[in-house]
Image (cartoon, rainbow, N blue to C red; front, side):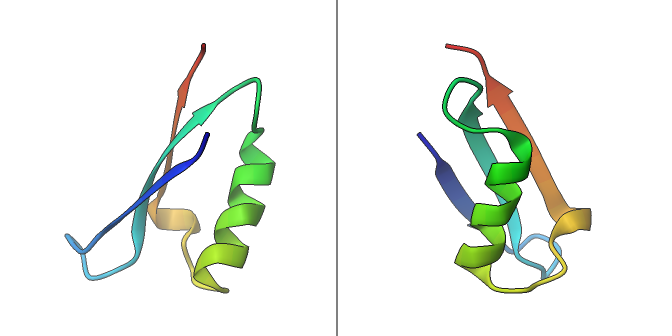
Amino acid sequence: MLWLKEMDDIGFATCNILVQYDEFKEIEVIQMLKRFLGNIGIYGYLRVLTMRP
């Protein structure tokens, strides 16, 4: 499962991502984010929170 939450605390599109290791890998999540948000400079504002099932 993948949850996206947009935040405006620094005026940029900041995302908190909750992923499960057995469903997504970090590279796949970043690729999904780039498709979802467009080509924004999100790498500096990307926090990947992983939870094992």
